[in-house]
Every structure is written in C-alpha cells, then in structure tokens.
Amino acid sequence: MEKVESSSKRQKSDSFSLTFECTSSLRTMVSVISELLQRADFEVTMDENDGKKGYLSVESVDPKQVCLVLARLSCSLKGHNGSPRFFVSTSDLMTTLKSIPHHYQLDISSTDVSNLYLFAADPICKSHEMSFKLNTLMQDEDPFNGKMNDMDYDFTLEVDTHTLRRFVRTTKELHGEDVLFKIEQPKKGGEGKKHTMLTLEAQGTTVELKETFHSIIDDTRKDGSTVICTDHEERRDELEGGGEGGGEGVVEKEVIYKDSFGASYISSYLKHLDKHTLTIRLSEGKPLVLSFPLGSDHTKNYICLVLAPKV
Image 1 (tube, rainbow, N blue to C red):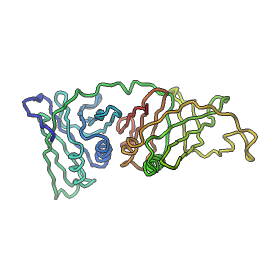
Image 2 (image 1 turned 180 degrees about the vertical axis):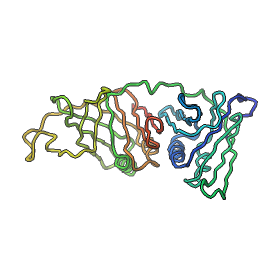
Image 3 (image 1 turned 120 degrees about the vertical axis):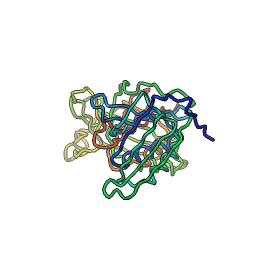
Image 4 (image 1 turned 180 degrees about the horizontal axis):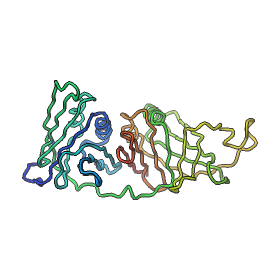
C-alpha cells in the first residue's frame, strides 16, 4: 500500500494553480505514463517569457531502470510559488481524468503539494461541476536529473504512429520480445537526398517478421541533422537508380545502424497514441528515443519514451 506523505514533510512555499482549457492532451499524456509507470514525478514550471503561462512536466524512470518517461504540456498559470513537484499514483490520476468529459475546463491546484485539488466544469453552459481531492505520495527516490536534451543523435526518423504500433502489436501477438531497428544506405552516394532503408525485424515463437521502408535521407537541413523520411512520393526503383525499368542501377548498401529494444515497453508507449507522425531518434550505443507531439507545438508539448537497448 502506498505511503501518503504528511504535509509537515512538504515545503509550505511550494504551491500552484493551473488551468487546461480541455482535458484531451492531458489525458493522452497521463494515459501513456500510466502504461509505463505506476507512480510519476510531476513538476509545475513557469514560462520564462510569460508569467501567465506554464508547463506540467514529468521526468520519471521505471523501477527496473530500463525506460525513462519525459513529458511536457503547456497550461495557463494562475499562481506559482517555490518549486512545486508532486508524486502521484498514475492509475488514480488517470481514473480521475477519464471521468471528466474531454471538453471540460480543468483547474488543478495545491497549497503545499500534499494534496491535489481538481475542479472541472463545462465552459459553455456552466451547469455542471466536478471536484476531486487526490492525495500525493512519498517519493522514494530523488527526482531524475539527467540531460537527455543535451544528447546528440545520428538519425532522426519520422514514421507513421499507426504503422509502428501495428508492427509492435503483431510482434507481441507472435510472442516476440524484441524489435530490431536497422538502417541501411548506399555505400556511395551524392550529397542531399538519397535512398535509405529502415527495416524493423522481430522473432516470434515460430514466425519471423520484417517490414522495410524505402526512405529518403535529407542531410541538407541547416541544423546539420540527418532526417529519414519514410513518407514520400518517390518510386522505389527510381531511388535505387533503375529508373522506370529498375534493376540495373541498384547499388550496394551498408548497415549504418542496428540495435534491438524491448517490444513490451514500445507497445505500452504506443497504446494510446494515434494519427500523428512519430519521431524516432537513433544512435549507436545510445537509448532509443520515441517522441509524440501533444498539440501543434511539439517543441513545447510532447510525451517521450527513452528506452535502453537490449543487452
């Protein structure tokens, strides 16, 4: 049974009051977190340029130290004192949010972060109100203080969320445990856009599955990053150099990245995500990073999974 931390152990100056105009993005964020973590560490921060705007953020590691969940969602900030953080049961928070209609405005506040107060109301007719009091928990570990944002990656991939979720779901249904990510490209190629192959592989009990995306690498971006675009209109035979007939211009390829990651973690992360393009970051010897936008500005609103490779 979870321990509830007494208010005497809290910083009395840590308080906040924030508002979400609707609950859709918040529900998506907490849904993903609850699939990966039983408890999570939330932080409320103020926007550096606008004191009326803020962010609800999460940086928590799973008990097995295999995955890290990073998330941030913008909100309106009505009050902010100290450095408010709260540690809560993700299932309790998710159950609470599921009971609130998507279009309701939601206020979340706390005077000493020992309790959270949630107040939801219909913003149009204002004839229905809902309120909740959620006890926070004692945090057993120190908050995560990593520097994932400072870690450079060799490859950034843009893939369809549904396509990746379908592959991982099939892997689990066939009792596969890992998903192999492999990137190949021509040994010789000019500058600019060129053909590359992203391959996903998995081994079930009796079935081996493989899915390949004939993609374009765009290494001409001003920021110096290499972006692999799996969604494009160019023909495979033209990418390989064979023109309309194909065949003759096929070039020899080399593997430039290859590593495996746990299918169960990826499946849990993707379970409640849909419709948008998913960003994948890969680099030899580094964790896999999956990033999904929560709203139009993906640089400020996102939910990320950082997953260690299988040993």
